[in-house]
Length: 222
Image (tube, rainbow, N blue to C red; front, side, top):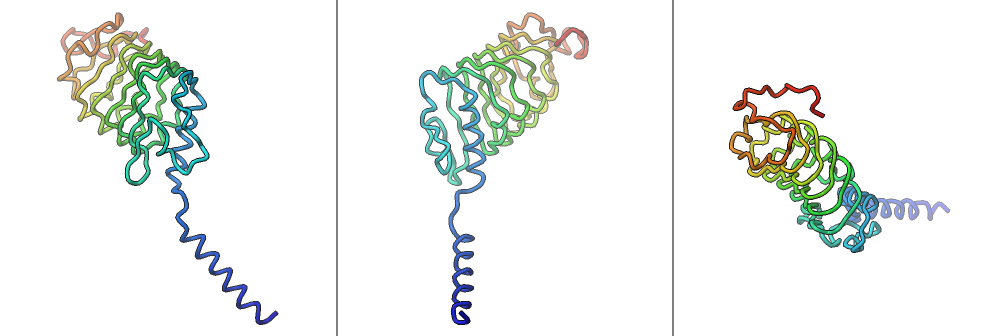
């Protein structure tokens, strides 16, 4: 037994070394796969475009409509015009390297999750032509890399968050054809936007500094 003891300790040490050095799936990939699978569970998918989204795989980079970088981190989600119904899930905010979130021309309902403000790498957020409701989350102002924000053709209501004027890289904004109210901010990145970006919101007034209407006027704006 005395002879076996050193051998046992040596084998134990080898097992520990193997466990520590084994190329286990990265935690980030599992988190991102879980986030995307949460979206699949929340959606109805009559065309089976999400059929390849198998949660038992190491990461979601082999799933259709998902693009990853060299680190196997999700950078694009391309599900425009996919005939999806259901709601957006807050877990999407965990996709820290996501640059393009393309979910336009579906039948998505419910609010835009405030957690999308955590997508710090996001360049394009395209949610146009759905049936989304509720307010535009002020948290979207945290998307410092955002260039394209298209929310037109939904049923969004409430004021346009003034915080969005801080989006210094914003090139295109379209919130037309909603039920927004209040006035149109004109500061910061909004200064170069045309009124076409805001058309067909019957309760929307402004622009803020041109129509002699203060931004905070109208307590009924919800």
